[in-house]
Amino acid sequence: MDMNLAGKVVVITGASTGLGRGIALRLADEGASLVIGDINEASHPGGYDEQPDLTTAALIAERGGRALFQHCDVTRSGDLTALVEAATREFGRIDVMINNAGVYRDGKLIHDFSEAELDLCLNVNVKGTFFGAQAAVRAFLQQGGGGNIINLVSTAGLGGHPWQSVYNISKAAQANITRCLAIEYGHEGIRVNGICPTYAKTALTRALLEQPGYVDDFSESIPLKRWGEISDVADLAVFLASDRSSYIHGALVRIDGGETLSRYSV
Ligand SMILES: NC(=O)c1ccc[n+]([C@@H]2O[C@H](COP(=O)([O-])OP(=O)(O)OC[C@H]3O[C@@H](n4cnc5c(N)ncnc54)[C@H](O)[C@@H]3O)[C@@H](O)[C@H]2O)c1
Image (cartoon, rainbow, N blue to C red; front, side, top):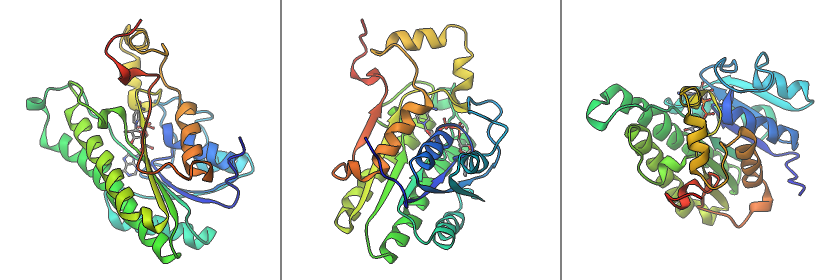
């Protein structure tokens, strides 16, 4: 299916590594121009990125695409306003905002998590998404309406899991930001959706992947019997960014190999 993203301008946060980088590369391959905001420019050495020696923008340029990097801390609303302004300045407009930057904390019961760990998840995952959406909506309205927001949520935002409450709480809030935005701005032609992956291989999940037996146990527990790949999530993001998904709105799309269907697996 031709996704026809030529001429579209996409702003994406946290795309120096991991899922965001994979999404940015696929969007650029489909013809989109990218503005990448992150607190780090380099690919994470502990991730599973292709050609990690190159930044995402450099790799896109090497493949013949258009991308620019701008430092952006999503916990600062001014940084997100400046990121969207960079898109308008460099490429003339913004068509799609992808709130991808996120942090994960796990390994503790609720009474053991610190306030700092809770604050980090709330600041990056919740406020970052909220500020990103605000900056994008303001620009969309100024452009005369229409637009597209995609939030990287998680299956963790759709239910509870043990030992990662601070992450789950933040992801649940992100899911509801997605719903609220969809209700408030659909009439302006602004589509809003959330992507809800289960574990995919990135720096964020490296510690789990390295636990003896974890990959096999987790893979065995889900119907499709494998971990998610960055490319699985990137393909979905490309579809949601394209006009091919023009009647999908307010959806929280699970991309989890069927993991959340049942606790039973054959
Ligand atoms: N990997 C998974 O299994 C998985 C599953 C479900 C959802 N997600 C979500 O997908 C998104 C991307 O995850 P990932 O696995 O690629 O993570 P990652 O750790 O590999 O990459 C996260 C990126 O976000 C950036 N970042 C962190 N804090 C930032 C800040 N304050 N401002 C700007 N950028 C910041 C990092 O520098 C990094 O480039 C996150 O929102 C995550 O919660 C990931």
